[in-house]
Image (cartoon, rainbow, N blue to C red; front, side, top):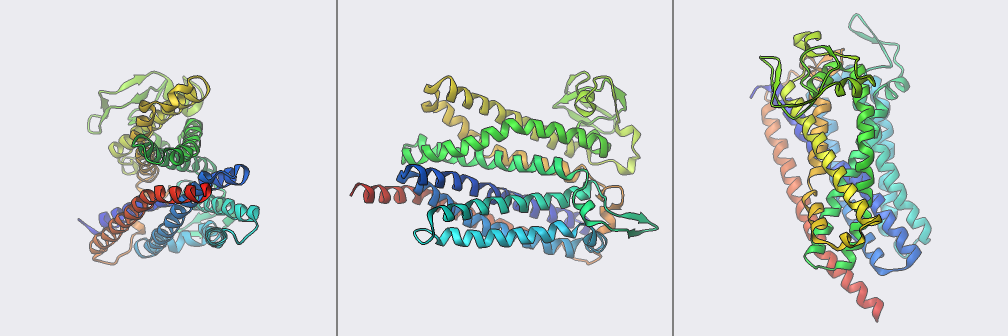
Length: 442
């Protein structure tokens, strides 16, 4: 393994772990706040217990997200110093604002965790809402920085120099809204389905059914609503990518030839040598419509892009297909759940519906990882699209491969620790609920 590949794999591995921790940390406070609101309005002990159980999960993911995010900050400077030297002054504002949001989140979480029976009940609830809002803002600000890499703006690039820097224009670049919307919804979808799946498993096993049923309904509501909104944001993102990054769109669809009435591909195995896709289902004109709003408009293929600027087609195409396929599967589950709520109430207590959510537990995060693969791999060979190549941004420091092995071990260890803590938390939930129930009855 050469140093360039090791540096890219280390960054990919770090992001792959951090994105899961960060998304759960962004979304879980909203679940927690809804349960807390129900407790304040109904005074039912079960909602208080759900709130306290989820708040401990929020604390776990806040800590792990902070650790993994700090590692990423160091990696940007150590692995990609040329990139940070030139890009730092331009897109540093969202990072600095993200730091502010992070501190607000930390302070609010401290108030929330230690404010039970000490603060005014509604002020205490508000601190939990602030945890969620500041966490979501942190995620949006980081995505704005990533969006700038896909749509660089806020500067003039002349003779290898970055001049007339405007950090506001850089932060609110052309890609920030579509990426922030898509990413925020993805966080709610993946976390909602994962949390609902865990509680569905506990219900199916007959463990503290009342507790887990309340928790399931809150998580499932967030996950299913977000899943149905996600295709809309996906359409917005696709049209945006078609305009700004035609090479990425071509790689996503394995679209080798520029043509009108371009077909949308479902599945398929790209043959880059033969410039074709085998075994794909083709829907004529749909790619043109999705990219431009017109079935007969031209969509650029890879043949119109210099060969040394082609993204890795196979990886990008497969990741895109996985993301879309799993996303539509979650939409289908969401539709069945809405039918159960509004038309077929008996389905809500059926085992098959619970099993569907259990099976869907990991797929939101698989789709999330696939989506980030499309975003990052589809931008290659650029680290700043059209301005700086990834190969030119890497550190000249030798021995990065050993750093990759070290950080891989750290992240695997962190994942094992988090899994253990969450498993212990889930198994302790029943004891917490039973204890509270006995106190209420006495």
